[in-house]
Image (cartoon, rainbow, N blue to C red; front, top):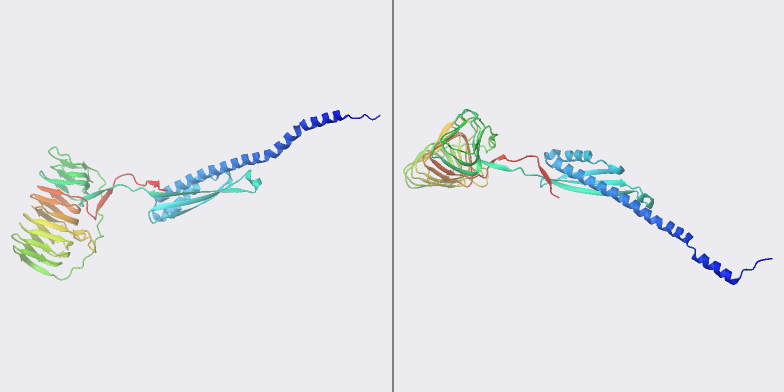
Length: 408
């Protein structure tokens, strides 16, 4: 006999079916797990990419810093080698870098890397690309100008400072190449930024305390063999005496003795004055020359200031002899050059006289905003000189070399 199902029983079974949720939860979870897994996997791959980018940036930073301090011909090869050594290629990544030396003295590097993916691969993304770039500039090594260089290595007392001598050079240095004993004697204190003596023995008398350093790495002559050669022509003036009055001279070749006696006013027109003899200014002369250069052809050529002479002399600022006030060829035998009792004088430019033993006597008042002096030796007697570095300056390194910094 077939059992019949009442309508009430059928309705109860339907209600139980609709209330059952076990199958729906499994289905919903199965659908939702896919994006969750993909998201977690993507996070892992992007974390690998970020880590690789950090490593890549460090490698390119180190490369440009190492390369920029090298000579220009070696900058790129050095940077490339450092990059290859620093980048480890984690997570199976590969990288390449390109470096460029720029006209402004900087070195730029750009690097790219490819990171293989693990989870994103199922979405069709097999790798992620990362880039890094950096620019480095070599740090400027600080330098101090040298206003006076005494090149003699054989003379003792290459620098002799007697009582009453004053030299005001607070922004520059005095360098002495003598290694004899004593290399220098100080009977007065000089107001210089530093006095660098290559030799180890000096004498300081009367409690003077110059800012002197012995056993110092004094600079060598930076101008030797670099100044313009002069072709000396025939004499323009020979054995000429000028008496008191107003005189104007032109550039040319001055032979024999050129003397200025008494007192007067001399104007030197711009140009090159070649001295094949002596040119002597005696007491009372006022000498003015803008844009002038004196060339002393041999050891017999001299330029001498005697007595109460006021001289305002400045070198040309352009052309072949730019910033050269007076000079001579290299290799001359040493000779004496006195500067006696000038009054209110001013010199601007390079005074390159490496064979001259210069003595500044009496009360010489000289003020200059830009002068560079290279002598064989120097004696300072009763003098009052105030000097600052010239346009053709010498300098000495002051600070660590080989530094660099990231500019971008």
